[in-house]
Length: 162
Image: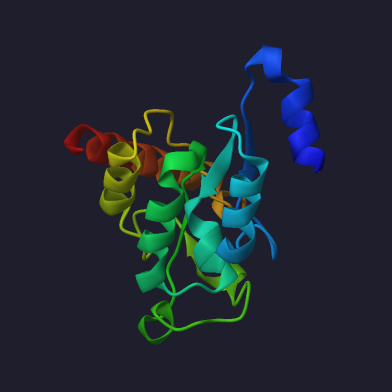
């Protein structure tokens, strides 16, 4: 009801609002999909955090279906990844399982960003791909800069191919 009021009271502004899939509520597609539907406005969408669905515990094999499901409603992105051990990638894990140990640069993680970008482009997404690397703070400044540059280079290359 609150979101419906916000949308109605800002109708003339044309401003779009996005909810990030984050934490224990909006990473649940059984919550997020009906929320977007029930508000019923094309001005309400998603800030897709590619790593958060994985963090939540969704198996890697399920991620691409989630990205596809929500891609038409994506207004912004947070591009991040996690590199889980092979035996955990397609398992249903507890929410946040060992994230501090396994979050990593996008070029080392499990998520196939060529596939993510293809899904987004197919749905008409043409906005920015925003890197969100939460492990940069534990690196020396030079290494953090190098890591971020490698992530940006990868995204540029993948974006050119799609």
